[in-house]
Image (cartoon, rainbow, N blue to C red; front, side):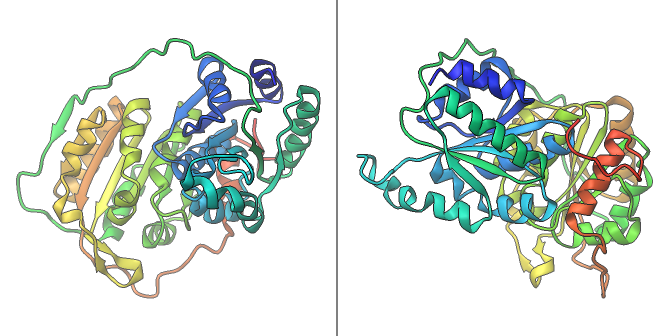
Length: 386
């Protein structure tokens, strides 16, 4: 099938934002996306799903691209992010290891179970035809499912796309400009107090994204606001989610509130964030050296120099703060001067007892955030892509 003509059909339907990880079966479609569209090269497939999910909330119609081996990496966000938040993604997953087709041994099992996995995750799918006219009809059907807030994936067999050369890419280098290391004792405030400071500085142009676990629940208790999103699953994805929203909504201030266990789970996101470098995003790590919501088991964050890692990944500013006053000052400076900023703060392991959970369902939180971002009145329930 002519890849460029197929890509143009995607474009006509509004699918102009892509994120993914390369696969030889999909290389031509990926090349088209890089050549002609907005493409974010994710560190892994789960990050790609998170980036695309946030882009949808930001008003894009996103596409995710991955090899079927990487589908296993995307299981967490596909089941605990896109499903409960009802975020419709269009996906293309290759069929390496197709039964009866010679391939590498590591693809054998995955080739047998790819479609079974999609079925188990309640993701509707079809094998993509290599006939352009039939593929157009399939795209129309997929687009209808997307309009109903349903994810839809195409399973792509070997040889489906013809060759699409990759145009010469302009490699961008982002260098760290401000790096402030730890140099005195830490105040070790509670997460609740740190979140209270962060929340006190938000305005009508701010979106706050809280990572999985007690971070979101405490932010909810401090103030349940329409510009908040509480990540209830997909641990480790909040940073990539922030990137997708920052890129799709450059006029908004995106505040990403992360935890050490979460960030350690998907540290590759730091490199992706640094490369794409949205200046409207601040990434705050509240580090208590523990998986607190699951029993307080220690993480290895005490052994990690997050400030230098973020700086080496290309964050414009990488700042260690020792107390609430420095946290407030760093946030205020970022609001005034912008630039992709990483803030690391050590906090205590203490959290409130009998902590509440959001009463709204995840998809209602997502819909409310979309209404906030796109200035849609509460009575208007059409909060899909703009």
